[in-house]
Image 1 (cartoon, rainbow, N blue to C red):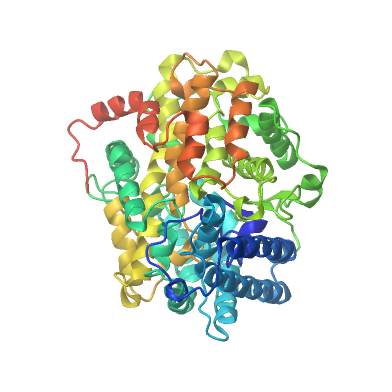
Image 2: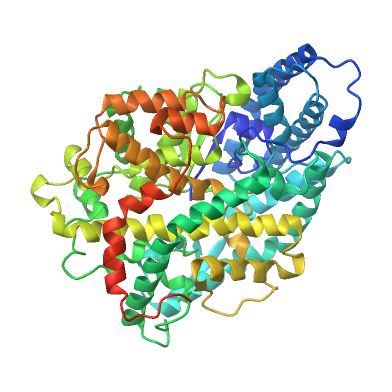
Length: 619
């Protein structure tokens, strides 16, 4: 999954690695100790003045901090690690101080809705809060920087030879040798995750102390409080959404396991039980689209084109791929990207230094200095990723007239869903419109199952992983997953939700969660689960606005200025209103639901059920 970082996120959060994203305003679970103290003569006017001063302080600091984090991500060495940790420490200390000061005003009478919302954001918007103990913020930042850089410099092996993160991800998608897949999976998880374990346990201790000082039970409760509802209600909402889409995942799992068994045999992948994690075309088994060739149904599965081959045949390079992504947003009426975007972005991997290749979108100055950071390869995955990352950038620019604390998405799931729902429009019709695909080669209706299956291998397969990453962290932060059981807790959740198992035995000497970037990068992950649900709601709404009449999965709203206008109305709200207000502005409903996703894949669901007749589904 990809990430985004705004100057707001960098300045107000512990954002070493440039990917921690601020939570939206929250409903506090408990009142802080500071809030319970007599606030002397504090008035609503005092609160207004405090918020105004805090926004200026954060704005001014955010820009130099963003630049320090950018340099560290695009030029990893001891010096940039030290700079990132230095500014990250200042950021964390500032965030904690302002959070505690904000708590003083929580019970002041007569607060305006605007000031109350901003106080909530200040109090609950820190991803990893350091306690006020001297030295705690510095230690937390040093650990976070070290974790981020450990991941960035991490290597696995293939045929005994070292292979970096970007290359191993690509190789996992194309290699069909089960022994080599096992080697890559095992070496990456062991080499990258293992060394992080002690640091991660210490990070949990420190940040939990900070969360308690701010009045939360633990860091996980603090994160869950960032969605305009109480923390427990939010956890229940994610479970409800999962229950809506789980039947679709279960059928996909059953079908995919059968196809893997046909390819590899019982000794590698049995007909029943969980799926071996390294066989699914992705290091984390989070998206399975890379093994579409294994699961494609005869006839319908031959959809007639391969986007990677089309890009190469048309002479696309990484810059042209990004220009094409920009063209989609321009077709909706959005202004072109600024010249500085092209001058300052990292679009390809530099040959002369270590960088964090994990794709991310940046807003460095809260205005126009928007950038992406990628190690782009000319392939279908990165073509989609570009449309996704640019969604962050256009969102950042749309809300740049909001006051500082509202420079964010309606909630963090919104930020991820914007580019994703635009990327759903990368249909055969869209590829024809931009000249990549010959109109005569557009797949006919009898290929719809193939088109939907290929989408489901990424979109549906991801859902349980999107849910369990933070379920693991919530358990780690609240102590229900103890340090002595970190790895067992992780693999138990992987089995329960995804129905997968590691290719080799794992023990508590390992730290497999650390092999997933967002764990050492300290990026809350539920946003990606929400984004998978929201993107289909946004997509359906856009297709209805565009007057689309055909099957939902064939819709492209490329070139529709009305959709762009309505979309911009939602984007420019930023975090200034509760997320149901933003959802209603674009979709007409205030309730997030998995039903649009279920509708999109309905033809596939019926087909999968037929294919799975006689199979023993579940694990």
